[in-house]
Image (tube, rainbow, N blue to C red; front, top):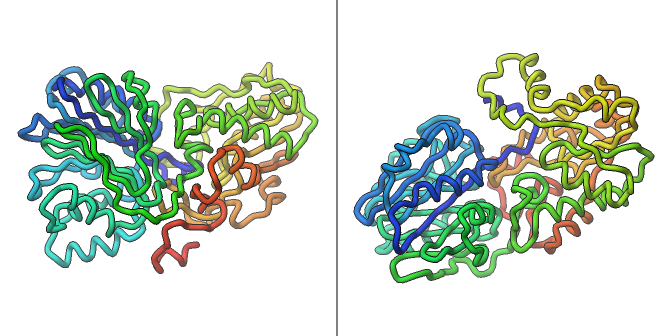
Length: 465
């Protein structure tokens, strides 16, 4: 996999089901993971419990590659948890695929994790010093071993103990032989919601995972909350009462599916309003508005509605390309953009166009898109970005480069405009981003935009900021 991809990369998706009647959950959880596939395409896994033992299957690649009818039919149990992964910490290999299953004093535990810990290195050293063997390079195994080594007498107390030691971002789905547990970190940086069908409870990173199986949304798991589902029903424990809530703003900008609802806010609607604010902030004389698929489209439509400039589908995305794991030369990387995006020449030729994209990270992909549109005959290209400049790295579960590789951290907006070879360039302001999301500013994590890290960074990470 090419770690130089020019995007804020997806991280992971987690999913869990507890059924009071059925032991055929594997297809339901498969569909749920399919709905979360945008959050990770490196690996996928499903674990199930039949009240006696946990059985699991996981592999590298998309859900459709990892699972087939025979495998799904072999995974029978009335509790299930699943995971789709994009590696932010830990290499891309089968040993790091999830769920992670370990033995403990509570029996087997399966754990699926979305997010990153900022103190995993310190915890890992402590665990190794106590004689624990860690077989992967993931934060997720650190959390699992913290639970195993807690010394507590119940799984609930063991999870609380682990959560209090772990610092950073984590939404977890944990399964024992007879319980399903959902956990959200004390700041609620990563999303997690709870839903229900007639005879099942469902945990999912996004509401799209509920929609696909016809589950009714009940509520979001709160920051600092643990939700436990067992034969008695659902109960909740709050392990942290005073932490500031800080949902990742980039969920709305790029990461979440547009049809998801996060903390009561429709993602597509938020993106559309981002586009409207862009149009108000940065007027331009143009013939058409186009969006960079997929996350730029809603903002482009909003920009068009506000500016009264027609929206047109000027770029087509190849939806069958998937991730390219072998990209040995820069020439192949450059070709990758052309494989993913192709202009409709008759629409852009001779036109003054406004291109709406969700973000600029290194700038290399944006520059290639501009060149593709120039080659297709665009007369003027004005780029508008529906997020503020990204000037700080993320340590909470998004794969961002070092700060010196973030173009907005080292280059002025005019310098970026020249690098991209566009006629004009403007970004959304932080204030208008917050207005678009319609969640209070102090309840959002904006660290990659303003350097305000809601979880204090250890000294070894501060030097990178």
